[in-house]
Amino acid sequence: MSDIQRLTLAKAINAGLRKAMTDDENVLLYGEDIGKLGGVFRVTEHLQAEFGAERVMDSPLSEAGLVGTAIGMAMRGLKPVVELQFDGFVFPGFDQITQQLAKLRFRSQGRVNLPVVVRFPYGGNIGSIENHSESVEGYFAHTPGLKVLTPATPDDGYWMIQQAIASPDPVIFMEPKRRYHVRGEVDAEAPRLEMTEADVAHEGTDVTLLAWGPTVSVCQEAADKAAENGRSVEVLNLRSLSPLDLHTICTSVEKTSRAIVVHEAYRTYGPGAELAATLQERLFYTLESPILRITGYDTPYPPSNVEGEWLPNAQRILAAIDETMNF
Image: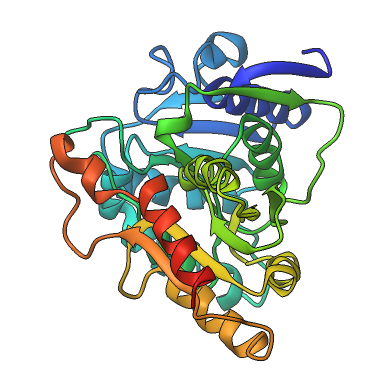
């Protein structure tokens, strides 16, 4: 493709997969309905026709079998990219991911590399039925041995999927499903950032909003509305939850002296708690007010007709901005 294009997130990830497969014949795709169908969200569309059924393989409907087979492939020198259809379907493969994939490199003292990427759509706000809208990043960010990445923009998606495939460590690659069809610029000449670097999505001086995946655009909406009332809000797109880019995070919060974490995952023991604790430890004398969290609620994900009341939105974020500024 040309150096700069406007692509949807789904098409950008597709282009990134194509580039990785073209550059390295050991890269292969494996998942449920990813071949002829191109995946539920068509992220792998046309790739089987281009690379053949031996490199873009439809799997049985068994998430545990999927991940277990990918581990064996990686141990034999291949670089499998596994697609699980939905976030809620990750749990049947959870044992393989957390007990085998995450631990084998450590247990072998680095002798066994496991360059496995596990991709799946996550998050809500698309009107899905039960078990099709979840934010499970906390489970995997809590597990040593895994890198946990989530793109928020098409440019993120294009470059981060290639960087994930090139990593010798296993990577959980979580794709915000509500952003699949949103277009943005993709610069195919060179990546702006390393795989685990955070990105300043919106510059500001009064308060930092820490977000990732689906909540980055919500925070940008809140920042634009806050500007109408004279608030200067910085939005940080974390991109990587494990490891965290603490240098960029702390630099932003040192500048603004206030922080709000925004995520769809549950509040209690959620990723926001780790961020708040880390910032409190590192920047205690810098902070002008308590670190606030705007999150999903501590209930099972609700029916789709009320998910808009459950998910973080611009109004909740604006209220938190007022609270932290008036502390």
